[in-house]
Length: 238
Ligand code: ADP
Ligand code: MG
Image 1 (cartoon, rainbow, N blue to C red):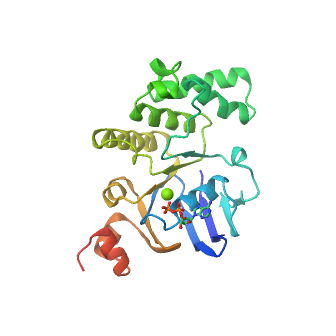
Image 2: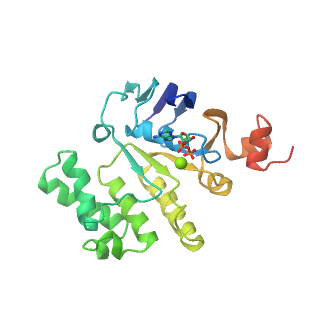
């Protein structure tokens, strides 16, 4: 179980308010998509959830326990980045092991968890390669593999398909959907692509300019958009 609750979250960079009072209750096991135009604050929200960025005000809790004070390695949250963010000097195995070393796992446990994750994502044949020796799709699979090694309660994906070509996009999207089914983990997935959002989401959060415009199922948003922004962004008839 991993219910994620975000309360009155604000973030400013200098004079710019990037997140302007975000309240969000993400249900355990839910696939939640954050959808909004470039620059609306999606990545900042994810980075704050992961602990990679400090909030200006507000709280984040997993199962009613605040995690706002915890460093990333203690949050039971894993993030998959648009640019993969793999360490270039480490092999696939090294990249996966490092996460567990940082979190203080024993050698035996590291070996077992890495092997298990490699099997789950069919990475066995790639384990000794460096990121530069992988295709874009393989790199993204490794990034996902690195995210699952710690068996996190919550997965965050920041536009994971945006650097892949069209053919691979469908494939990786399917892999992420399968992963969600298999792990029944809570997933928060950022995109600016309406089609991606509509096909993956249990619920979609439409954001604009640091604020939530509407939260609902793909069908809710399409049939009953809360305002003109949502209607035009989703492309529903008005
Ligand atoms: P999105 O992911 O929706 O495209 P971001 O969260 O990346 O949006 O950015 C939202 C706004 O915050 C943008 O105007 C961006 O320029 C600004 N921003 C993001 N990170 C920083 C930072 N570290 N310093 C200053 N401004 C930032
Ligand atoms: Mg972004």
